[in-house]
Image (cartoon, rainbow, N blue to C red):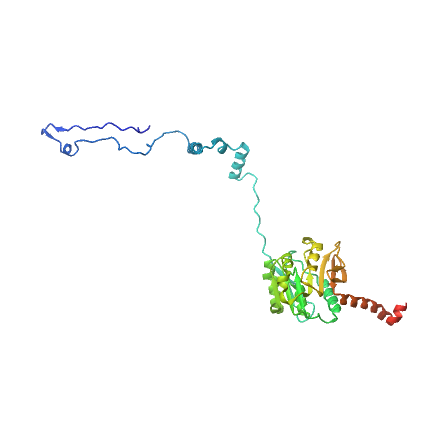
Length: 335
């Protein structure tokens, strides 16, 4: 059924006469003429359509009309999904299809106290370390041997020479804390994990009382090395550098090359490197030569130092068998 857009002819109601009184009806005086035609307008006449189609079918037809009005092909945009697609959607709605498993929330990270300071002012103080293998601290036997070698190479077996220490891949901070405890004046820690810094490293520094002489850099080691000159500043190169990275996540050749060419290394710097088996380590690190190379099971320890430290180590190797035999150095050379 539709409303005609054409105007209707005017309809005039005749005057009604009351036959009983023979007078005009009262309302005839007020409505002598009524024009039932609508006022002409410029608006498009509305159309009322009665249909048995569903709402979905009507919506599709409206979309088709809209696409055709804009010059688009309705078949291209309103193509029917394949039977497999419809089946998969139905199964997902009913919960019987292949469901994507939700990721289980990771358990909260926790710590325990298995490490301790081995020597110096904070000796035997316990240190926090994360449970699990997220952070792998240096074994105490390796750490103890490393500091014994450094102290002997520096000329003071009891403690380290005063200086600045750079602890790369610091993690728990056990190496840098050991350095402060044994005589270093300042330590810079480089650790990229914010949780390790806030829940492990900083509490360890507060517990040992070394927070005031420590600087923490929450940044990747690669980024730190690229901006080495900014971090070194007016203080110059570091006296000691410890490198204890996660074994499987670094290329030792690239890493040691980057360290040796940086402004962090000076002529009197000692570099301590922990590395795994089947890793080829060079005999030099820039201007530094290898002072020691030890093995502890699957873990290896290389220490690079200045030329004077290398000569001292050679003289110690020469004097040691002499002392064991009870001979003088000249007698030992004659043999």
